[in-house]
Image 1 (cartoon, helix red, strand yellow):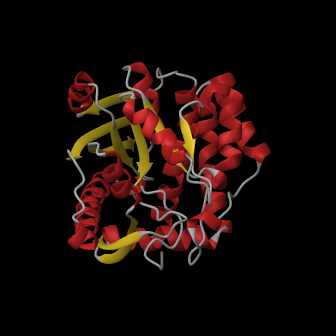
Image 2: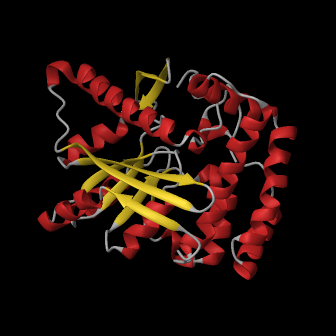
Length: 301
């Protein structure tokens, strides 16, 4: 869990302990999804009661989305996050038996694969990107995730113990090191998909502002700069969770090519960001408790 209003998301550490996360994952491994699921309400209540920054971040989002943010709404929000994190355990093991998964827009990726082209896939902290990675393995799509994983080290370490190969298709961004671009280029040239987060401004600070849920917010321009440099298509993907065990994968084309004219580069980037923010808002309204940016999202980038 990351949460702290007024702080950059990169600077917010995980809350909880390695022991607690390992215990939940161990229970899931031994007894399946149901037994640790009985503990999750206690975990969610602990976060809500003892971490005011979690409450503030959740309330700031819920008030914009649905005009109310009662304590039980915040609890429901945090519980949804805990459930999605726990479900990652089963997905990295390749165990889909506990879930009902639908995939809307799979035909877009199949058509792309038939051409042999790779693409940038813009994902987000809305729902689960793990279900996308997991289903891509099942359906023979090559998906790598590009991101900064330093502030989720406890969860990633626990997942690594479950499946040592969980890092195989992760491309890590390290501040001051641009070598990840060559790995991204290689993946896309081989016809793969590279997922990158479209809802958190990166270390480089490159961003544009767009209206999101009624207020101005900062979104990264990195995904569009990357796709423009690699001259590849861009798709959007969302993995939405619904109780008790449903995941709905949505994939949609965004741009066959990112065009950034030299004399109107800033305006073009802002237009892409606005389009993305509108689609993100659409999916937030479909699954309101799936938003997992527990920090001051509408504050300075």
